[in-house]
Image (cartoon, helix red, strand yellow):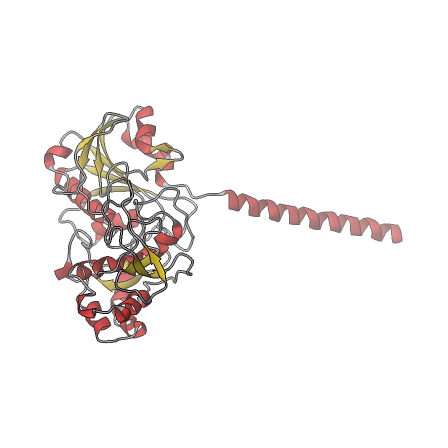
Length: 392
């Protein structure tokens, strides 16, 4: 009897160990399923492009592993006729707001057509020799990040000229929340083209579908989205490449929706330092202990605001970033600034998309009270957004 029980115990123990090992194996297998972006799914993309003339709307973020998508497709025999470059240029080295010029890519010899400057929308002539436009740019999910404005104009031009657009989707590093005031029509500009909140919570592929579906372009664009694999909106995502010269790390990208609002004020956001959008300051805030001095940095900031002048303010490099549009820094520095009438500049309304926020802060409203004024619009937007989500 004792021998029988011993054997039975051994069988049960082995069975439990096998189950545990199997569970561990499944967990390892699940962890190994890394995010697969649209550009990495060449088995889906290349058959769509073969034997057709192509234009590429791309920048330095359009990578397939360690190789640029343009180089990858050229090696596969795809007929790329030209590159169309957004803000910051094809190689991502132009300053914010700096005109991107037409030219030629030094590596491939392909012509580069600028879509940032006087020509933001592809012309009929620029599209005349292509059948398909491929769009692959890493976005950060914020209304005033101009890549979605470029997307709008590309889709509009392609719809008018009977061309197809293929969007290669990438994760939104701020895709786990939606927040901020909606854009009012009177503040529409290239840093805000659509009636959406500051943080829209959509991937570039989802957003393209919304542009089509909401009638923001007069004719629907022939659109195909190559979807992400192994990603959902609640997943954190670390960008393998800087989306723009002054967003150097994940923490800055998470702060960006909130700290970029200071671009509409007299406050420096740290351009000309190695910590842009993670520090805030001004030469007149001398009572604050933290300080930094902006300088010109090649490839990041040429002639930044307050160049070679010491700025005093806030160091946000180690703060825990809230999952919301955080107005606390804006309210704090407005109250501390010695000449409040000069704190905001006209660009502020373009960034936030509403005339209300400046007045709400000037009138002493709390952040909580301001946020309540967004609630109805945000609920309506969330209902619209739900129709276009590709990932849960």
